Length: 205
Length: 197
Length: 208
Image 1 (cartoon, rainbow over the protein chains, first blue to last red):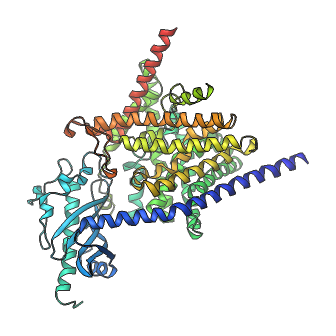
Image 2 (spheres, each protein chain N blue to C red):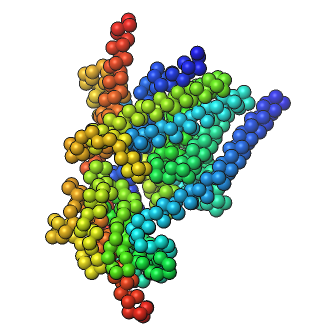
Image 3 (spheres, rainbow over the protein chains, first blue to last red):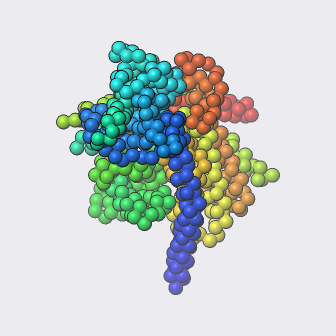
């Protein structure tokens, strides 16, 4: 009898602890989930705004992504356009922002590239990377990512690092990471070219 | 197939659990004085990590179905604890010889962060069932390789005249650092190209 | 005065990282910059204080044979709470620390304090113990981070993602990158532990 009573107490205590824990977590979830979503959305809007300053509103454009995917060559190691955002201000198209995945030295680098309606690249931003600390991670530094070669480039131009005969100053000791960024920008420029010229032809598509 | 090979090779060599991801350091330092025990620990961990990857995959799908991902950490750790207990009982029943060999390591595995770690990484990387299991097993093989290699070095070191302040953990950590430098050599392999048939 | 002793114990005599050699995984993994180290330390401290207090409150209710699973549930609940709060209010830090936040649940320090201290002592003492142990852990991980960040990059207290520009001590080109790579973690911790062993043995020899 004693054993049975002891066992029932044990089970009841465990069940109560588990239920209270689960209940508390459900409550915490209710409090934090909206804030987590909000923080994510805000971070995305801030990054988009930074890449295409003239635009105030951004919408994800699935149609544009499909058009780009159909036009670009899908070679296995080519950087992949992941998402396309169309930026507008007071109903006017201001350009596109692309998120591009490109394989760097030790990781997949995700970049955001903003190109305005004239085909001029405005800004490239590193969203995530796990390159070698102290070397490849320098792709995030202004000295590299804000260099003049990037700021003056427009569609139709193919960028390359100086080692490959281009204008882009690669990071010392991290040529592979630098090239990955350059490839991603070229891919975004080609994609922008597809979208912008199609529009220029009076929306034949 | 290419993807599976990339995952396996990556988990064993490039992002080795012990030497670059820093998961499972406690058993790595604690149970690495002899090669024999290191091998035993390695196999016990491989077994549990493979199973845990499979089960937590199903569990995560269940949590997602009911929209209670908030309970992820809680349910994962409980399932792993139960799993370890269960594995211990089954091995004891079907193979007393194996139990003799692994028995003492099994309870230690619950608090091995490599097991919970691999379950969380599988979810984060969005692996499917097969990829999750391959990742679990190969991460554990990477752990086994590291711990056995390290035990070999420590066996030799036992006879070396180590300064008093360095005896025990300090010299073990410095040695682990040197092994880790060797593993840096795997960094930057283009696996997709290597395994593209 | 015993409260102060319980608090101080975790900081020095039984410092979890340097003296008990517990919780090695996060110490090695996130100690690349001081800001990460402090963030990790404070997250673990919050869990430690919370779980110590609750376990101490329930110490006469939880049956002996199932205490470990009960402790694990309580700890896991606190870890999840800290994880979600960090995701909501400090998303950048949450992203950097990644899976090492949920992994606090298997950090040996927490379960060890629950078993060795909180399950036997009053609430206030347990709280002080949790605080002391947590801050002891924070202090150690910050110390290791400071060495690695300084020698690796020549700067200290830098976290561009959170808007800390930090302090430049010497040119970045002079930094030894190996210090912020994985081997640097092992070697730094090994040398620091050896240094502490040496200091302790010297102190022991003097008083003897």
